[in-house]
Length: 167
Image 1: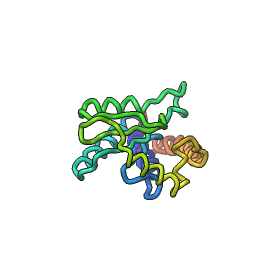
Image 2: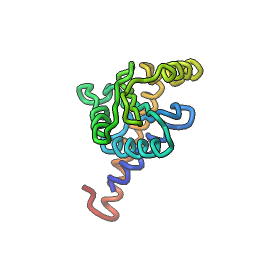
Image 3: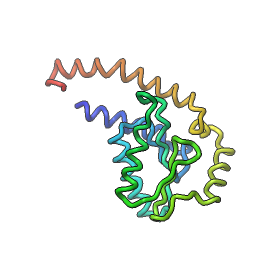
Image 4: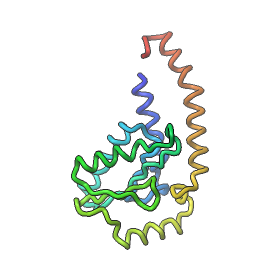
């Protein structure tokens, strides 16, 4: 039962972080996910991108600001997935963001992609939260976390009383 709730929470966070207009088409935002869920999502996205002829993928992994001891947890797993799939990757200027070459070549962001990304930032300033200004996103995450902390124990107690043992 807990796995189902974790999956629902993961799906919700992913949809919110990756809603149309929040990230560029060549970008996937994994921060806020558990490591295993982030790995599954990334593997699916890489497979999809490669099957549709995409040349690269930007992956937002977070800087670890919300992790214990501020250690990045998703980034090492993204690096592992890339190594396993023979893909070259690099950390972008923003340490919470990675560039993956989906064609197997070197992970050097072509200049036109850097320019395109900067132009996107200029025309979509709300996306600059991924470049150090995450107040609105953090507030939203805090609200979600409060709701989960408030309602999850109640749900689990009701489930425990009504049907089964919850581990």
